[in-house]
Image (tube, rainbow over all chains, first blue to last red; front, top):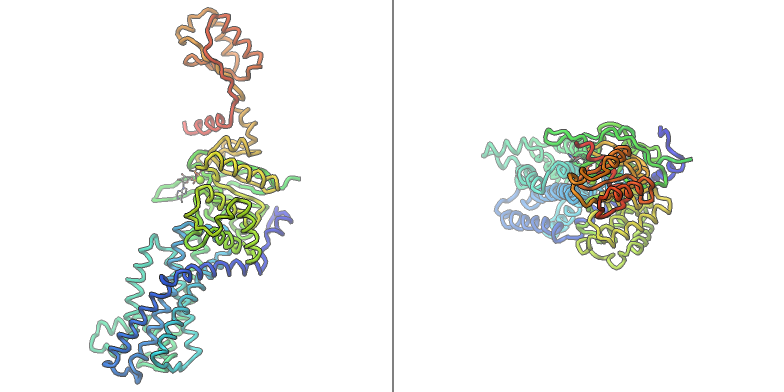
Length: 275
Length: 322
Ligand SMILES: Nc1ncnc2c1ncn2[C@@H]1O[C@H](COP(=O)(O)OP(=O)(O)OP(=O)(O)O)[C@@H](O)[C@H]1O
Ligand SMILES: [Mg+2]
């Protein structure tokens, strides 16, 4: 296959499994350190946001809202908030990091290294998943100080968290490659993710909107409703009318696999990476 | 037996930007042997960085191939990258949150070096390149010269077989340039194959065993600098005559001189300046001088000019554009 390759060079060019693993680990670590170095910029704000949501909606207004599906409003809302934190944080890390590396030029370090394109994409996405789960974990810990959650189906809780984190970290990676400026990432989050999340039943169940047909339709047609619905079922054991958890789980799995494959394919093609 | 380090085979790269096609590299075929100090020369936009980019993993070739020790740079990119250290033209340091030492340690990691070994190599290079005192500094605290040295250290972190340097001395002052030259020479002496791109012909003459001249994506000459210079006519002697051409024409005995001038290829007489190929020891040159004296033509100045790579460069790259 390598006609003309000299044996000596070939032995120096060999990449052992250990070397490959170290390279992957190094890139993952870089992506982690990038945001852990400035927790005041990256970790604290989303957590403060969520805590404000909990205090205002969950506690102050929740008292007036009473129960939803047999649960106090704060308990009903928490799985939605958790999902929102995981979605946004998994997305932001790769989106900003990939764009920043392209813009700063240090993407050259990865492109000219023995890392494979698949490794580059997966290490970056894995770090995004870790950030999503880290922030989600902190939010959960904070929430558990205020209320209890039953965790009705633990394996499903874990599966749904992981799948959603992978899906949105993968999407973030794609956006980080696609965008031509910082604005692109913000635009995607502002015009696509925020509305979909907000209209995906983080704060309400679709039935609560029955008097508002356009909003109800938006919610019923919004795929995020099913992601959040499935997670809510996993945490609370609450199955809302017409919302079996399984389509949501299937959708999460599909998105996770699809986004991961998309990001890897773009890296392999050198999309916005190579000229 | 000579071992081929890099083989370009019909390498072609066409960029399409905003509907316009630019043929940056045109069917480049070139072989660089192991242990060579090879210079890639060419004016701005000649295609040097593009050529290197195919090996570095930043450019997708349109046609043709590059092999590094027989390995295809596109298909076997991972292995090729392990054998090659590239210092890019533009500063591209991962400086957002990493300090000088961390930049080297992370680079080592991408090449599969375990943390302890990565730190050991980073420290050795920091000391060797006079950056030890700056190891905890941020990149923005470094001078231009320090950044260059850091970029060179980064290219060397995995102890590559081949070192590719894209205009490493551009904008460097004399002292830094000398320092970088010494480092490059030392690395070459230790057996590293070096591919250097440069605008400084003096640099290529000084360092490179062979050079290739690219112009508008085309290879226009390859060979040792001395050989290329010879090809363009070698050394010349310039004689500034103290008279206008019109006066000269009238001067007695210039007919004979003109005949001589025509007899020797490469001799020109223009604006009162007579340019002869050869050196001052050359009998033909000496004869011409005495002939001028006999004709009563006064000589204002004589410059013996050793032909340089620059002359070749100017001749070849201008020839194509005309
Ligand atoms: N990404 C790109 N898209 C479109 N055209 C490009 C791109 N990169 C380079 N070119 C064009 O290709 C040609 C060769 O550029 P290249 O950077 O390889 O030249 P160079 O020899 O390195 O020049 P310099 O000495 O200025 O660094 C130029 O005409 C340049 O404008
Ligand atoms: Mg260049």
